[in-house]
Length: 550
Image (cartoon, rainbow, N blue to C red):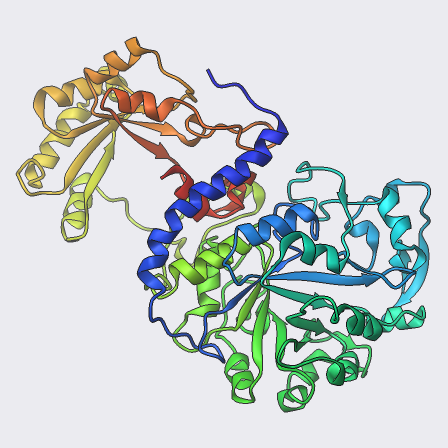
């Protein structure tokens, strides 16, 4: 029988699942990537920018995050580094100017918190300007700063310099985000000089900043054939500290931005606003089209699989991506993502397949405890379908492969209520013509073997034995017994890929192979888009989970 493995095994399994996924993805990609056209500025596919590497799983900007981000993404993935400067002018990749938000520095008494002005706001915290690179590398390590994510994946990730990132991962492209030039200038540290220096040793593909003056100041120092400058928009009411204008006002003058940048990076709601009350998408803005008209590329941020998104997407991050890259009107030129594998799959596998169509969803709310509710627009009172109405409805769909009818509590109903569910179902199927050749396949599912035996006596339908218990192995005598009354079984997901208390997959079981050895097909239930239903190993992406099982 299977036994839980260590966390190290879980880390290995992440790589195993990725290899399994990529054995499937090329089959899809080969169908859609040839001779496709895009509504990007260049006409090329949108870029995937891996924010801090694969930061949705590993600590942001850690070596593991960068390596996995490059491995799991399209070949031309761009890796993103939020640059902070140390006391000795070294450029390090840490996602926040306050080091305690991404490292364990606050847990070490050697380091002291200080208070500085950051964009005009007095801010307490631990800052890189107070320490040399050597100071930080001796005892400070990167950690998962988002505590809603797995905080147990690895320890001891050293802070990396920009050069370390390039030497470790050899990425196709490097994106440096300079968030706080004005702050470092106050401390006699020059981001401009750092950019000049680093550009002599590594190729920088993109440099972004929310400070217009900084981008203007370095425009003459970079080679536009190698490096593109991107102006980063923050909240519309926030102010660019370098020119004292709100980002909302700057949005009205894209022609001016074009004088110092070749692109803009904007929050997603600049393009697809979401109603804050109903959580439905509002009509898209004209920003992408307007920017393209003046020759600006548009990059959208930040794509995360593990946060609530508009009801329109049914908790499917691929669907969200498609609304930005394939909607019939425009395509952004790139996406900034914490989960670059999902972004890569959306672009390379699912775009141009006609999947970006409105969908109605089931009105069950199985994850209401997490405040995750399904599309309330369709949460209306409707009449229950009889089995006869259901069968008549399904007969009108030529693409239908079959129907599943689940029967539980039949012995109780026969004994206590004098109701024969088996006879009622059999008669209704017969009247609907499902017992005739050429009709869709009928599957009768039950956890009661006596129900399946009754149907075996009367019909030739596929009989599916439901096993709600978690099983990791099955003895031969049980397999022989099941074979006498069923053609197939349906098991829970954890019977194939069990997970431990930390919500990591611990390996795969023998369940599928054992049933297959007795010529019993295996179905697995139940799959949900909501990210809280999935083990960490599936990257909060329902498509990755399904691909792994298939």
